[in-house]
Length: 392
Ligand code: NZQ
Ligand code: ZN
Image (cartoon, rainbow, N blue to C red; front, side, top):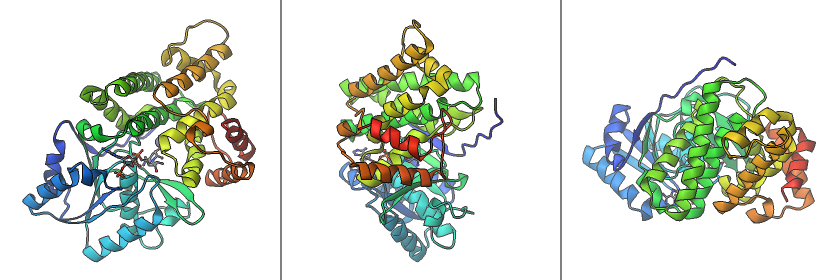
């Protein structure tokens, strides 16, 4: 068992109509002039943005707005947001939306509070020393960015998608009303469930460290999301299922399901980030498309964990060799993806990279992780290329 820090400073306000408390929370955390940052317009169409600005107006809190954060959010809009915040003397960021709006806001927060080019942080050139405070109103259960220390930004030039993590960017508060997720397309709900499970699976498939309570939490979370993702396929308006998934999304990525182990594997995410950067696919779908190929490539090097996963999460029968049980678990996971209409290879994802593009993705991925990475199995550029090829 490894030593660990567990730091989750975010105040979570969870339940129906909780967005009506936004002004009170902004005041509690000292915001006087806000940038409200959002995505491509779903919060305008649903009326959420209007409800939020009405509440702020009534409380006398001033704000400027900036929409347009796209899935796989772009650096260009981050620069625009930084300039706007400086010009308007913004002292608090409010992201209304999903991981893309939240991550874009986090990057804006770094850019305002630190000198120099904000991309330096995502390019691993230096560390941030501060960030503007951030509050969140979440509209999709997926990334866990509402409690996480990470943000992922795509630089348009060269389509480089990179993540940066620091405790400065953990939101001060997160408003989570599961009802707000009911306007989501079914595809995005399923992408979100996939991402949530993957955040815990990345931490679970490891060769470093072991903690019984952490594994029990992880397995319980995975079983819960699996069950409720299936319920939401049949009954998208089910409040309780949406609530289970939404809270799981935060717990899956606030560090809880990794305490006591080595931090996890994370190679499925790194391989997906190249797909997201190059082909602009939905993050969750990209993860589902690559996971099976990753799992088959690494499972023999992490057999006890793959067996445990098969038995405790996928309900595989404890019959046969460890390898057979592990493989049945991988197959069962892929079957689950299919049942929630997620892809299990790149073709189903809708992308058909050429061999040159596969080589390019593997090269960029290897550069992005500093040569090699992984805990279930350490992967180098050649291994990454093999996994991309197998996922075709
Ligand atoms: O942009 P709008 O119009 O809001 O539409 C969004 C978008 O098209 C839509 N949507 C969101 N809430 C909705 C809604 N549509 C109707 N009703 C609602 N209530 O859904 C689409 C996806 O939204 P997005 O914010 O892109 O999704 P997600 O939360 O999955 O975020 C994905 C991004 O987060 C990164 C991913 O790589 C990707 O760039 N990640 C961030 C992480 C973090 N910060 O900790 C960790 C993750 O592993 C991930 O890498
Ligand atoms: Zn993710």
